[in-house]
Each structure stands twice: as C-alpha cells, then as structure tokens.
Image (cartoon, rainbow over the protein chains, first blue to last red):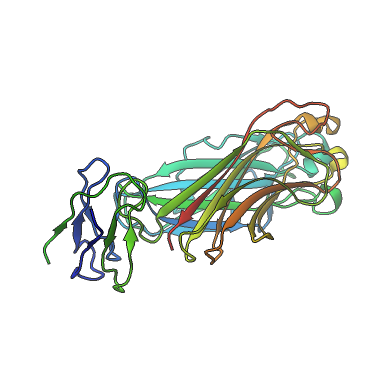
Length: 193
Length: 190
C-alpha cells in the first residue's frame, strides 16, 4: 500500500492518540507515548541510561564498597516496565583474596547474589600488585514504580588481611610497570512491560 | 479526532511502511522498523550491528593495535551508540609489564579512544602468566553527533613489548583457540 498520513492528532498528550498498525502478527494495538509519538511494543527498549567512572578508591575494610563516581538513575514511563541492568566492574585485589560485585537500586540489593562470578588475585606480591579483576553482571530488575530509581555498583573483597582490600579502577601499585587503570560502567535499559 | 486504524501494511519488511504522525513539534516522520512496527521514540534501539572474532590475534606492539571491528552507519546524527565488547584475553606479564585493551571509534580514519582497561589478570606465578586466559567486558555509550559511517575498533597493546593475545594464550608457540571475542553496537534514537 502507499504511505499513510495521519493528521489532526492531539500533540504531546499521553495516550491521547491511538493508531492501530498491523504488527508482524497482525494483532497488536499501539498507543501514543507521553511524548505524543507511537510507542512501544511489549519487550521493546524505551530508553537507555549510561554512566561510567574511572575514579579510584582504596578500601581495607571487610565491607561492600561503592564504586566511586558511578551512579545511574532512570525514570520509568510505566510502573509495569522493567529495567535491564548491565554492570561492569574492574578492581585490584591482593594476596589470593576473592572479589565480587553486586548492584543496588536505591541502596537496596537488586542483582541476584553471585551472578557476576568471582575473581581471585595472586599470592605473588608483584603479580597481585599489577592485577585487575574484571567482572560483569546482567539481570532484569522490576522496580514496580515510575521512579526515579538510582543504581550503584559495589565491590567486596573477602580478605583475612585487614591491611589489604579493594582498589576500584586501578591496580594496587600506582607507579611503574605494575600500575594501571580501568573504567567501570552501568547501563540501564527500560523495557516496555 | 477518533482513533485511526491503518490496515494492509506490508509485514516484516524494513522501512516498507511509513506513517507520518504529528509529533509534539508537528514535523517528525517515523518509519517502520525491521519487525514491521512503527519506530522509534527517543531512547529506542533502532539498529544493531555485531561481529564475532574467532581467530587468534597476537602482538608485542606497545602501541594500540587493531584486532577487530564493526561498522555502522547512523540513521541520524542525533543518535547515540551503545558499544559492548567482550574479549577472551591473555597476557605475558613477565616483569609485570602492563597490557591494555581499548575500545575506539574511527571516523574517516581518525581514532578516538572511548574505553580502556589494564588487562593483566593472573592468579598464579609470574613465570606462567602467558598460559592464563580470561574474560574482559567493556561497554560505552558514545554520542558522535555525526551521520558519517562509524567504525568501532577493539585494539590491544603490550606496553612492556611482551606477547599479548586475543582468543588464545599469549605465546607464539601455540595456535589453539581458547574462546571467541565479540563487539556489538546498538544505535539508540536521539
């Protein structure tokens, strides 16, 4: 068929204009979004929010440590929508210790426990000094309200040596051949419910 | 006005059906996506390109050396691009020399570094680092503000000039493939 022009729709009013357009299954109805344009088949990505940080920090406590400078917020268009969360963390750890990451939404745990895996550094001092562990976590979150919702990335090192810990976005040693840095990130995608 | 029904559109053919629907500014034309539905509100994903690198790549260069890439041509200069790469990586870290992995954007051959990480990763003894194969994830949201063709490139460097590898061990006496590496670019409507 020829191109179709629809005119006279109300501008910028949420769900005011409705256009029924055959989907590949020929059955779906789409309503206009708050911006006044046609939205959004269930499962489609409505928006993407991204944040990164190459800020560094050093912690020697046996506790979860927030990646500095990395917090990403999203305001959902509908409380039924979901958030696809993708987080990547890089950090140095020392002396055969195990490192983990997790993601919090509004300061409450959101990521499934253990879905990012574990990294372990070397017992060799110089190897550990130049080590950066790389972990990624991807999951679907269901906040249940329009928000805003703020996501943060945290790391934890299980250590029996209180003088060593977790070094976000850097190696333990910051000078010479053993030094190095990295960028950690969070990506949020709103998925139509 | 009353609800409007459009029928008889061709199903599942990219850009086959066009519906001009007044935007809040009254000027925007929306085209159908590859699935046959109307696209794309700001924030929607409108195009995906991906490449999987399956060969072994080995270098001792201390300058960033291109390993693999994916090309994408923006639909609009206002689009953003979510670039995700996952590498199977190995480094000969003798003398603890730094190895790096980079994610770059090239426009007409001009390189812009977007993302990097030091790649050294080994839990054993220093003399055996070249046998360790590990994963590196990277992700960046890029806003190039252009409609020129884009090339997103994964490159690596060995700042100590020791062997550095993708998809295999960091040693020249072994050709085995231990994994694959990928890059995916998603164009996001602006």
